[in-house]
Image (cartoon, rainbow, N blue to C red; front, side, top):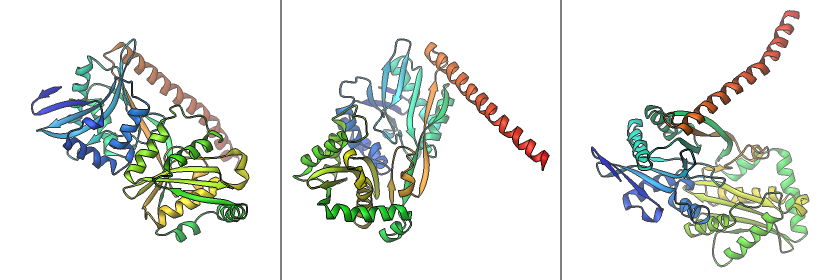
Length: 373
């Protein structure tokens, strides 16, 4: 695509097209999270972006070796082009793949090459990312160096567990009310014909996918925007040996289901639901305890990740919290980019002013209290 001074940019439209050395680079990222790897992107493209002509995996080569891979999609608007990370509603983490030796000035060349391919890019957006990662820092620096105006923004909180050795130690550290609830409901379910199952693949997989969909449809959750995504992810994970799909049945009826993904020493709690008509059995809590015990005792994971969101119940199961952030950058040399930059600046200024006005009364009250003491 672009070649100069030993640097070359290639564009792939699908992970199946990767050269072997590109595959190896991406496999290294997949070890951090399966959502950064080829298996994830194949399913995402097939079930969400199959007709999207803007999807591309841009690859930067230096001296013939792949130095970076950036999975993105380019959207053509009326007033300019937008380059977005290849991520959406289903993504809990995104990152370009950078080699250990890549520097911000190299990424400037990369972004310039992608921009030249499309004539111009007005807005760039990458999310959700780990704000503590080298990729986040390098991308922010490269955008500034390249003449863009980048801004970080908060996406969501992420609760996770550093496994404390064994199941007994973990469970003893949970709140008493949680342990007691699980104990009581396990007895109730057993007494009334309940059973817990764990499926990793095999002949029962397709029926279990149907059971999961049945539970999800009867839960409090909104219908899936892309109904083929979850079955595709479950099948792909089963093929890789990553799938842990738990089901609670009551007299044969599926009343709770959870999809966990176990890979590279980590367990990700990807999707869970329970049947609203059976919430009195606390099937979600019972199943979570069952799944947690399995991944700690059998899979011997070192970390369990609740992925997306600050839902209050997650604190009962996890030990730590971190955040996921994004980057939005504007090209002030284009009308759309300049308009976006002005709006972004005004919006952030308004938030600071409102925050300052909210703090002022509190400070006045504190000053008055101090004067009276």
